[in-house]
Every structure is written in C-alpha cells, then in structure tokens.
Image (cartoon, rainbow over all chains, first blue to last red; front, side, top):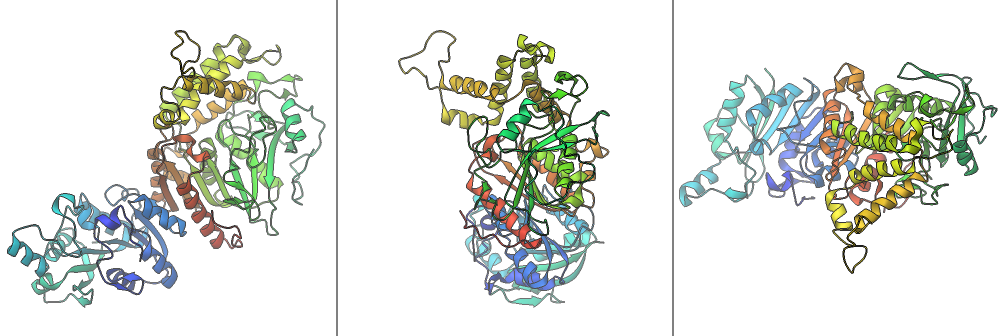
Length: 222
Length: 409
C-alpha cells in the first residue's frame, strides 16, 4: 500500500493505521461494498486513487476524484484516473445536482472547514453519499482524555493537537444529529471496531458510539 | 505543392492548384519540406469578413493508422509555428516541443500521427498579413482581415477534414495553443476524444491584454512600421518588434527563474559601465531575445495574433456561462497549470475545471510545482511529463489504440 508523504493522505488520518483487506484499506472495502456496479462515483480526498482504481476494476464504475495533494493527484492521473486537484471546501459548488450516483468522503469530513456545508453538498451532488470518519466518542479516546487530561491520540488520529488537520472532530451521535437537522436520511450505518471489523449500527445507539473506532454511513438527500 | 503524407483524398471544397502567387513565407515552408494546403472555398471569419483563397502550412510526423484514429493535433502558442519536432528551417534550432514530441517520446511518432499547423494570421506559411493580397497583388498589411482563435480553429478543421480524419485522438497545446484546444472542444466536441489545455485560460485577462497592448504600441511607434505598410515600402520595424518581444519575454518567466538565471550579474565583472549599454546580464539576455525574434517573425503577424488572444473569451461566446461551452461534452480533459505561471495562473485553469465540473465532464487537473514560470510548458518538467503520459496512455487504452512500445523515461 502506497502512503504519500504529503497532503490529505498523510495529514487527515494515517491511512496505513487502519487494517487493510487485501490491497484495500478496511473502511474503503466497506465503502466499496456499498456501491452498485457501473455507477458514477466521485471520491473526495481520493488520495492516490486506491478506491477509484478498485471500483473501476471490480465494479466497472465511472469514477472521478478530488485530491488536495499534488503527489496524490499526479499518482492518480498517471494511472489514468480522472482526478482534479482541489478540496471539499472549495471545489464542490460547481457540480450540478445529482451529477453522481455516489459521492464518497472517507476520513475527511473532520478536516473540512465547514462540515455542515460539505455534507449538504455531498447529498446535493450525489444521489447517495458515503461518509466515513473517526469517532471521537470511541471509548479509548474518552478514556485517554479522562486518564491523562491531554488531547487523545490514537492510530486513526495520530497528530499532535497543534499540527492536526482534524479541526472538526465529532462523535457518531454528533454526526447523526447534524444529518437529521439537514433532513438527510441514513440508508445504511456501519461501525468499525479497532480491528477494522464492520458491525451493523442498529438499535444499540449509545453503545455503538462507545465501541466504534470509526463509522461509515450511506446517506440520501431529503 | 507537398501533399499530406496520408492517402486521404482531398475534400471537394479544397483546391489543390498552385496557381496562386508564391509568397515568401510559403517559399520557406515548402523549401523546408513543409506542407501547404491551399483552399479556394472562402473561410467565414468571426469578424464577418471572409477569406479566400487562403492557405494553411502544416507539418505531420508519424503515420496515420488504418482506421485514422491516432491523430494528435498540436496547437502552437503566440510565436510558435508548425515545426514541432524537427530542426527549424529559419533558426536552425530544435523543434519547439522536441522535448515532448518525436520517436519514442511522450507524443510518440511511432504511435501517434502528429499534426501541427501554422495558425491563420501567422508568418510561416499560413495566410497572414505579410502575404500577397490576391485582389491587389501586394502584401496585405493591415488590409488582412482580423483573425480570432475561433478562426484559427476553423481553418485547422478544414485541414483535418482534408486529411480524412473524423475524430482526433487528442488536441493539445499550451498558452494560445491551449485556447485553441478549448475552442476545439467547445466548437467540435464530436471531433476529439481527448483535450489537453496547458497553461492557458478560457479568456484573456485584463493584465494580459495590457501586456499585449504595450507590445503592439512598441511596434506601431517604430517609424519603420509605416502604418503597417512596411513591406511595400521595403522597411522592417525591427526595433519595435524586438521591444515587444522583450516585454513579452519577461511575462513568460518567473521572478525566481530570472533571479536564478541572472541575479544582478554584470557582463563586465570589473564593474558598472556608468552608461546605458547592457551592463546587466539580464539586459543582454533580453536584447538577444528581441534580436533573434525579429529574424523569424513578422511585426504585423504579431499584432494580429496578440489581438486574437485578447479577443478570446469562451464564456462570452456561450451566453456568459463558461459551462455552456462544454455542455454534453464526451471529451476527456486533462487541464495542466504551473505554480509560478503568473501570465496564465492556476486560477484560470481552475475556472475551466469548475466549468467542466458543472457539466460533470471527465476531467483531470494538475498544478505542477515549478519555478520556471509560464514557459514551463515548453521545458523538461518530469512531473508534467509523467502526468501527461499517464493521461494519454489511459486515453489510448480507452479509445482502443495499441499500447505504446516506447520505454518510459
């Protein structure tokens, strides 16, 4: 697995921190599984294009990407993926409503300047949106804060507080509340534990918010 | 007349007679093995005028494949020409994009059929102001009709029709060449599979128009310009054209590149000359640039072509909305800009990308990190080349062209 040394790949969430399935990071495998074959997909923060390449190969998906780091974009274009240099805060406005079947934002929402606006854009541009993010309500994070009294760091959130791009961290409950405020429906909810194993997010509610290291949500516009 | 290297039959609208008076530029083009297409059918221009007869000088490299699917149209910049990948007949220097085009190179002539035309209004074989006006038997001068980027592209399309090519694999170019690429994509979307506009914009900015105006005024202030009638009067406005080139040349470089190359270095290491000779190396360099330019370029052509760039505004041609230019496009785009290019800054490329996003077009966009300024598109920039190679290889796969046998650099 290629890990780039600059840009979102390295700065938002250490992608090599999560467990990978085959060549694909575990949360990306969960996302890929949610996507219908031959659909149109926009992957925001696509890194070196791992998910897009996988989707193109295994599901004949017509994929596009947005990536902040020049190294990431160049890697994508070199491997014939259609990717533009940009980010979720600045480059979503131009896209027309319903331009894609799926818009994917993996491990990036917490690094955007305006997550609420970004979330609205995702479900506007895509008929569906798939969002994954690290859960700040995860029990280990809560425990670290309680026990040490310092900003918690984990395998997914490895940056020190003054150097982190993760400026809008949230818990799963926070996220679902925002989605509800925006009238966004949640079609599927999965949580991943520290080993990257996915579990359906059901009626357990508060317990999931405690046990999940990250969440993956399939969303639909109001 | 040298015909194209293909076996394509000329279309009926195109006359192949060589009865027209041979102009000096045409003589250059033909003497150097260049190809010239003479067209009798009038070309309707954006100004409302029409031009007939006219001619398009061009060069081709490589072979057109059996199903005519491997043609790449290369569009040159303001002062470029059709000599992309071979020694220039006037200057004796290598082709202007020989870093990129040739056997085994990125635009591989063993794989693609490369075509480059001298733009309409140019001075190296295509009809322009220094050619003979058939109505008067004398040089056109300022009687030559105004040309736009749209007109340049229309003339190129006549050539592409003549060569029997329905769909170009790719149209590629930088700067004004990039404007032509965008015009091609907007005007003839079904005629190209891929478009690569490099270091360019969908409209010429106020700052760029201003720089061009300085250049034009320098030419017109030269007494040898003679109100544009210098050819008839046996004179050449070389000083004005050289100053225009010197001013323009500064805009092609970045401050950093100028500093790295010259700093405040003196030509005479013993000290200042206390006069107005070229004390500084940067002055001497610019003077050389101006001097060598006038040997190969026509002053009136410079006026016409800079004007064509000034007039370029793709959004205005589509009701003020740039996205309208690309509606329903199926073309694959690769937009490329350079960090230190202040003549066509990344924001201009990004505007094109956003317009393409607005129609959900298939677009890649890369900003290449470099300190070489606007001219970076002409130089050996590894990141630029790698990106372009990846894009073209992907397009070649998708369009069913045989994979490149050329080794990677």
